[in-house]
Image 1 (cartoon, rainbow, N blue to C red):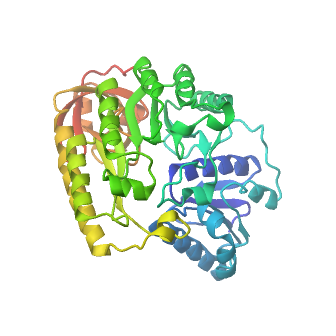
Image 2: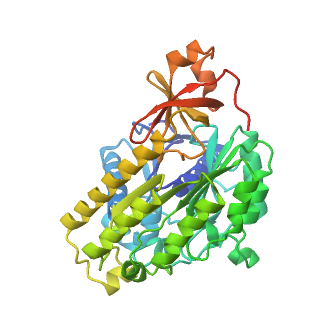
Length: 447
């Protein structure tokens, strides 16, 4: 084991990733050598940043802690620390059950980890993050917590009330990242449409994105995790006004059946949801909507599930994920309802819904054949360069594949030089999710 070496393992969502990136910058500033998510852990210190959202994520985090605890028992690890959502929610139970851990930190007190390692946290450190994503894009977390109280969701139990970051602090972070070469920004929050209510007494997401879009060097802005009730419609005006605000919105709708929506405490009706989707598509032509749907919530009847299928056929979401209800202790659903839908029924409904979405996605992607699109190149993979359009967020959405031989025939240079660059392409083929394309000309696209 080399002294002052750290392996930092991030579980869960991109919001956790931002926390890890902040901690990495401080650790490196303090003189540590830090590896993020290495294939093989070799550091003398290991930090596990955990997820505690749903059962599968909790199990994955616990297994990782136990695996690193075994390394400590074997003598290949000196210190083990745990931070994040899982320890925020289950601190006392975990301290008792996993004594191998040297220190536990929650969702908000993890900066003390640096202090416990003998170093002071430097608030003036610039930049305040070590980017772990490809250098051309980054996640921007604009708030923590959530004031919504959806019946099934444990997030408010973990993160507490909504807390917005000051607008100028966010904009300064964007400027710092642009100076490092970041061109594309994924704006993330538990509920971004609530941004500003606590600080400015009004929904301020439109103002924030408007100012972010005017920062020189910001090429793409993509919005994640909105909520349909009380949606700030001025945000769509900003999207139309700025070409670098992607025509993309990630907004979890969860269900369409009125009885299920009521049980979920979503504060929106079936008709309002139909009207909501219709208005967004009308006001931002060509927008791509990503949503998340849930099957198997207590009280979901076969009739209610059929309503969900009908809604999905009608809405034709360009991007969609779905999951089966999992009871989370402490939530309203766990306290008020019996988890009475058998797992096999949940899984059958989930499979049927995803088969429908696969057909819709194939049709949506096929409609792009012959069209000219702008893509940013993320990486080389085998005989292809892999990129994304403005309609595609990293990790979760479809990709665009460009043949290396085709690029060479069109006069492009080294594939490595194209990573992080924008290209104009024509779509030549598609499958259920991904696109295949050919470059239009060797000039780099500038938006």
